[in-house]
Length: 334
Image (cartoon, rainbow, N blue to C red; front, top):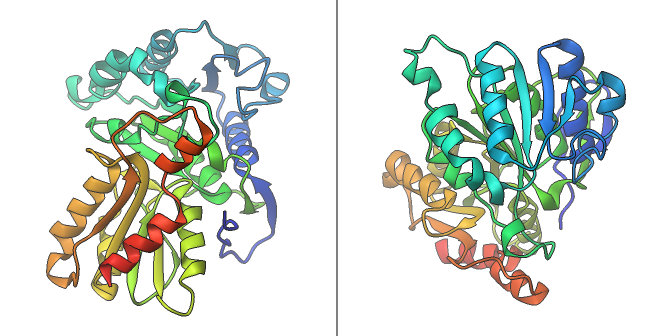
């Protein structure tokens, strides 16, 4: 995979991983606001399955870093209640595959409570979860499901790729007064990159133009961002690609994406959700609505076929998109 995109900042930076960036974000927000607390399966003693909350129990104690029973409904439901009562919970669903267990809480309560109380009730609940395949964790631990959350009115949806975005967006999510579903791809936890040492946030709803180009716009999410960068290296000197990370999927910064398509006239959307009703389809539809008359070719989508993610490593690699698929999609638009 390609290296992490560089950060354009004048201040001092440090090189950290996505895991460390997420941990720093939670640490800083817990130190800043005593209403912030964490709960989930093994988030306290073990620091979570991917060590994201490691050390926070020692720092903040068991009242604010809590292990829970293996019950996603209870994790989300108690988080919702605490948020409605004025706290700022950060709850963890270990894998997004298990959000279905809590889906009534998510779909009928978390997403709708502000609306059903006439807009008078804040629900500052952050739901962190891991999605994505590529590490042979089999079909029940490898799905990419942020398109399901995008379907729910009332919930913000974030999908991060870089340490800079992970830290800045998680801080914004925790401070937000509406519920935020925060998706962390398993294959980007170890990606390292420069992050400002000083306090910063990344606003929800702002895409990032990571590379400027003239021939085609590539919109890529999570681990697919690095595959897109590999594709750009393969096409270097031949095709001039403009690379965009949407960062927040709901609200989607279609203005930035459409402005890029206005310049290039072509678009490829790369995401690891299934192509059937996936996030690529929504982004492609909005490009067609906002920039159709500037398109020189149909928008190309790259994603996972509508099949379970295989346990077999070679079959899993066949199903998940790679840079070669993105190169093919880019060439299809030319």
